[in-house]
Amino acid sequence: MRKIILSGTSLHLSRFGFGTSRLCNIALRRVRQRLLETAYEKGLTHFDTAPLYGFGMAERELNPVLAAHPDATVATKVGLYPPGGTDQYAFSVFFRKGAGRLVPVLSKAIVDWSIDRARKALDGSLRRLGRERIDLYLLHEPEAHLLATDEWLRWLDSERDRVKVFGIACEAAKLPAFFVGDHPLIRIVQCSDSISNSEADVLIRAGRPLQITYGYIATAKRNPKLDVEVALIAALKRNSEGCILVSTSKEVRIRRFAELQEKYDNSPNLTP
Image (cartoon, rainbow, N blue to C red):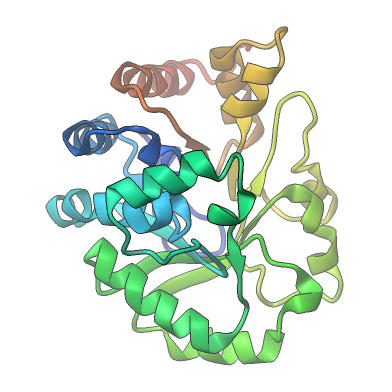
């Protein structure tokens, strides 16, 4: 799979990156590991995760894959944390996920924008991932008015040995508040987008490139008039120089993502 240089950085990311938010929906660890290994083998060499995903499970599951493939890149996040901590047994994770539908407090994310909590979170993410340095460290669904910006900048700059690049990951609707005064924390933006609603146009209107976008599969599934594969081809054209995050629990779909990328590379004028 063709790689891109992420705008504003020296990071080389695969065109399709693999999102791990749904990894904990797979009950068997060997199946989770096989899925991640297949993603790498098929060219999805950038992995997106967070302490919140699977309550730390997603980061732990990435550890063997990242150890086996040092050239893989990984993004993780800070600011949203799982109730019960990030080192729970699998049973506790699945229980909280299920019971949280009835009692939301069991699975609702804990929001904490203190630097003390962030320091501990970075330590934990590095330990779970088995990495000495994180390629891309993203503030997870931040609210501009809640951030002590100067304090965050000083801390992130002090962590250059452990964090290559930092930015934010959020829904596109939150971005306008960060464009005021060209907020220094949004050097890199990972945001939601779709073919039907073009939410990431908020970046284009602000004169910024699309760097990392996600949400195309989920929104296509909710739209009976839009096929998932058609949406992904359109996404490759729309975000032509960035990374597009995809997620699945099925190996066959990963193979199909790789085929779509190859098809698009061979025919960039392909009509969705």
